[in-house]
Image (cartoon, rainbow, N blue to C red; front, side, top):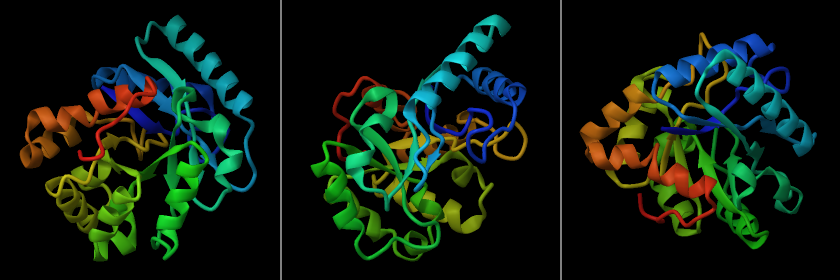
Length: 236
């Protein structure tokens, strides 16, 4: 499995503070069947240099090799939707055109379609992160259909499916899956304790809704297409 959204790099955002915790997260992920993790620190108005992200990922990969943990760390970012997309070309997943885009947690703004269009015009392919935890989408999952029609893809959080974010997030995840509005499941992990990098249980539960093969594609074929900079089918 490939986890395309994980705050695993130490001391760079609200993920782990020290490298030992990053290593613990990678060990947990490997034991869960994850072979690749995309390190995606938050990028807000203060742009963390992409070179710093890559340097930390390289250091973590070296440490993991020394620990005998068979997992690869790639780089990307979890970028705020309000940042000018023209500034974000260096933050694509594995240097691809795909970039994780985070809208405000409480609501999807009325100009969201315009934001998606701006990313596309900048040569990027936006992947909307964790909409099932957004109040606007919980109230009206149809919002996501509009954004997909505008060219966006959708990633939901493993913990939302398994109940870590409450019943509303579970129900919304299930609705989005049932309607074919999900292209990726990712961990959005921040810690080896409270928000761990695990996918397998969420995939199992998603499989009860969309079927095992389709659920696995959300953590295998579709993420592989992203890191290879190939096309992902617009319909999950």
